[in-house]
Each structure stands twice: as C-alpha cells, then as structure tokens.
Length: 508
Image 1 (cartoon, helix red, strand yellow):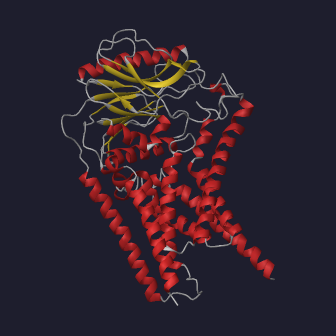
Image 2: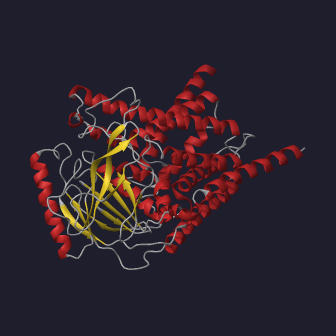
Image 3: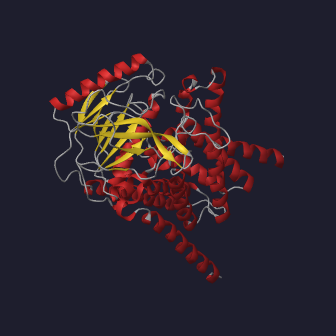
C-alpha cells in the first residue's frame, strides 16, 4: 500500500508540475499576465521541497512545457523549402528545433529546482539567491543563440508598472522579482518543517504582507516610469516602410520590382512629409544593394554585404545606412546574434549547408550595436538581437539617443510579432530611449521610454507610417548601474544565509 501511495503521490506531483509549466508558458507574452506566472512558480517552489528525483522531474516538466507553449511559433517556419530544406524534412526539423529548446529549458529548470532543494527552499536566503541566479541566467543566455524570452518579459504587455522595474535593474531584475513573488505565494500555503498547519490568523497576516509587497513593487515600477525622460529636444521625423512581401517570394523578380516601387514612393513621401530618414526592415535590399538613384533622404535598410574576415570574405546580414546623395551604403552595423537554423548552424565548422538562408548563409559581425550618423547615433537591434537588453544598454552608454529594431518576422505567426512588441517595450524601458520597430510584415511600432506604444502599423499589410522618436542623452538607472541591483539582491541572499547560520548555531 505504501508503494501505491508513493506512486500516486509522484503522479500527482507530475500532473501539478505539467499544469504549472503550461500555465507559465501561457502567462508569458503575448498574454503578459504575471499572476498566472506567480501561481506556476509557487508550484515549482513546492516541487523543489521534495526528494531529489521528484525535484528533477518537477523542474524538467515545468521547464519543457513552458518552452513548448511560449515558443510554439517556431512551427511557423514550416515549410523550410525556401532555405533549401527538402519538404519531407521540413516539419521534422522544425519539431526537432522546438524539442531541443524544450529539452534545454528542462535541463536548466531541473538544475535550478535541484539546487533549491539542496539549499532549503523555505529559507529567505535561498529565495534571494535563486531569484538572483534565475535573473543572471536569463541575461547570460540572451548573449547566445538559443534564447528568445523568459520571465524578465512576463509583465508585458499586460502589467506596465511592474515592467517599470526594468528601468532600475533590467530584465534580469524583473525575472528575479517574479521568482520571489512565486516563492512568497508558495509560503502562504506551505506547511512549516514541523508539519503543523499555520493558524488562520497567521496565514492572513502573511497574505497581507505579500499583497503589500506586490503593491509596493508596482508603485516603485510606476515611479521609475514616471521619472523616465521622454524627450530633451526636437523629434526626428522618420518614415517606416512596411513592404509585407512574403519571405518565400522576396528574391523573385516580381517581388524585387514591387519593393523598388514601394521604396521610390516612400522616398518621395518622406520628402513631402519632411521626414529625415526612411526605414526598411531586415534583409529588404538583398546582397550588396545599389540604389537606382541617389537617396534624396537618409535611408536605413536591412540588407547583406561582404566583409573581409580571418578566413576570407564573409557574408553578413546588416543594417545599411545610405546618406543623402548616396547610391551605395556609406556605413553599416552587422548582425551579431544569429538565428538558429535560419542563419546559424551548430557545429558549422564541420557542417556547411550552402542552401541555408535565401542568400547562402551569414557570419556574425562585431558585438557593438551603435550606428554613427550625422544627426544622432542609434542603437540597433536586428531581429533576434532584441532579446539582448545588455547590448542595447551598452549602446546608450556609447551615445545612442534612440533605438531601431529592424526585423523580418515572416513567415512566423502573429504570436511572434506580439512577443517582439513586448520585448520592444521592455528594451525601451531598460534603455530609457524611444524605440522604432521596422519589420517586413510587422510589427511597425513607436515605443516611448515609459514602454507605452505611441504608434502601431497594421500587421501583414503593406504601408508607411511617420514616427517621431525624440533623441535622449540621459542614461536610465539601468544604463548607469547595469546589473548592480541584481548583484545586490544576490549579496543580500548571502548575507541573510550567514545570519541564518549564525542564529542556528546559537539556538539551543
């Protein structure tokens, strides 16, 4: 009977972990509803208090299902025939990529829950240390190719005040706060080590304290957003062209003629509406583009170029800048963080896939995201790079006065556009800068430094919009202090742990 009871308990724990993982995936953008995530994290903390095997199973299920739900847009890549993948291999390859990412999520969260159980999940010091660890892990993962979004983006678009904490400590601090709130919710119902239930009055006091913390965090975030500067001078009027040309067709002759017509009309419209620049999305102008006529206004467009590298000429995806009167790009910022499979292949030194990408595969450029211009310097994120807030924050310290996100999110579904918009809001808050998004099928956005969307283009439709970002030179607290608040949180956890140990030694 005892074996049956243990099996039933393990089954119930697995069901709870699976349900919580699904809930966590749903709570992330595009929904962006943190209370659902806190419930999911409370279950994760509860699972970390079990046996070693149960901890690993809870974390593994939770992490895998959260990734499967939040990154299901990857299946929109199918069919991959447009990048040279045979049709019978397309769907299995897309599924394999999603499953690999889910497996990595499972390993990471399982390791986190195992460590939580080892340190004692009911202790304040463990909560602080592991919240800081989670936030730091998301920042580290965002520097590599296999991360898109995590708990740091959870408040958006639904909870802008809580997302305001990113102005102080970036997405890492926001992620740590979610973990701490989940821990607090778990402690509301957790049975203490002695096994006796808490008195109802004490539980109500705990609930009141937890709700007070939630209110204070929202108030602090709202205050940080209110402090953010929204402009120090005249706005730059820029015209965004959204071509809405399917990626599978954009290298055909008809699509190139269509884009050329759209571009000429946009340049004329920019002159008529006194815009200083025209913005085109990632990859719009193809390889080594040359304009049929000199640009009458500044043109900032995605494209491809050749750059001499250590092993010879390298093809790079880049944001190209054409100055007034230029037919060829004068300067460029190369894409540094490449998309798995779309631009980057694991073990590429042993495996070269010449059909990869419609232009033959690309190499990463330098890490700096700063684009120098005669008007004002920009911080540039090309597509997937929007998930790396540290790089854009570094660009503001180098002088970037507003941010430009250039992307081609076709053929992905609308869900990815919505997540991209949430990340655009998060990056604008972190950097304390206006952000303009220019994408092939959307989202075309204007976001202010307080995370509010001031302008939005209809997704999937060709068109133009004039946005007016305001150059800002003042650094946000995050831009100035970087990860210091997250580090202080971890140091507080170490200090509390020493105090807990000293108190345990002195107690009779």
